[in-house]
Image (cartoon, rainbow, N blue to C red; front, side, top):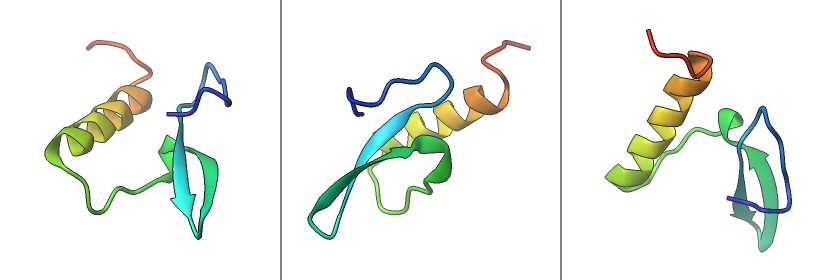
Length: 56
């Protein structure tokens, strides 16, 4: 994740594309070819983000 972009509402990740790096909101990404730990982390983030970070 990027340290350059700071937001209290959104998590940004660095994406490399065509020899360039971009800070992209995690909510706008669909992960396609990742290991199980990365898949779980993204799925957990989407769950908590969609639930407002509240239990129950």
